[in-house]
Length: 240
Image (cartoon, rainbow, N blue to C red):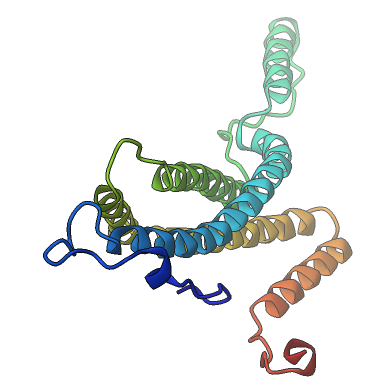
């Protein structure tokens, strides 16, 4: 019996089985099992679905915001072609002036393009963060499909067959560690958010130190509060 559900009088609803028929297709043990399993599954799936729905919404919004930052900073990882064009014009001008005069021009830079260490760190952190966020959304969608198949109704079958199918599906959830996977999804999203804040701090330090320190302190304080051990649940408000 599930906690919070009134006990059922199965002896009144289902008369005793004839002797020797206690495990037959129409034995009362099967509908009793199915009713109890339905209550258990309803509570379990409701909690999982609420968690997955929240994760999908947050992962979608977070990925959209993060993509905006990545599009801007990824341009720093490739050569500036406007600067390359200016360099070529400089070479043409240098070759032209050297034909008819002895005047010299300052030498042009010849070092190959290399992104700055801060740009490498920022893009590395943000691309990994975006990848984890998208992985979280993908796995959440797959889990929703698994849960939909878990409660799919099997028609034209006896109560014993439906009970066996339900047990097989429940065993499959345990074999594939679906509860653990659902529990890991928020962890992936937390790691993704932490990487984003780390990259954001580095990005802001290259722009303005005061803003960077402010954002870093707020982000660190938020994560400290989130992971601080929860107080005891035995408080007056929870005892009402």
